[in-house]
Length: 177
Image 1 (cartoon, rainbow, N blue to C red):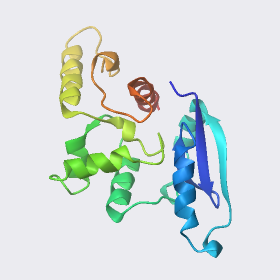
Image 2 (cartoon, helix red, strand yellow):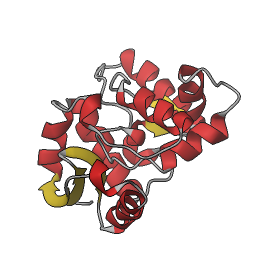
Image 3 (tube, rainbow, N blue to C red):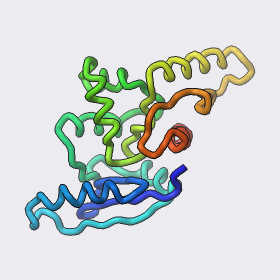
């Protein structure tokens, strides 16, 4: 699992959070296309996963400086506003008022520049979500009744830029808060 994250900020607003400097290079290229007077400072800092989770509890949408199309920004805003639970790509597409645009929504999710704070890790394949819901429903009739019985280790959580193990861990952290 990723233990350190690189936060890139433009004028004190979060532009990306990544496990490497790849996003920083992308942000720098986009900043280079802006008028020089429109950007004061670009900086990076490293934070731990625990610090990232704490930041998620306080950050507001207005504290981001994101580069994307209007559609991508709409998907990212919808992700940011999600209640903390698992969703399928088709559910997210419907929430974005684009139920037929599952692939477009999935692409926007995949290129989310702000790991964890915009919780793309909460989006999993529909088949896996159905299985998790089935397991949870079955658990309700047993001694285990808890909501933690997603059995994340046994379902396919889908692709993630930093690997499925990191995605599983981020889901667990996110659903605890």
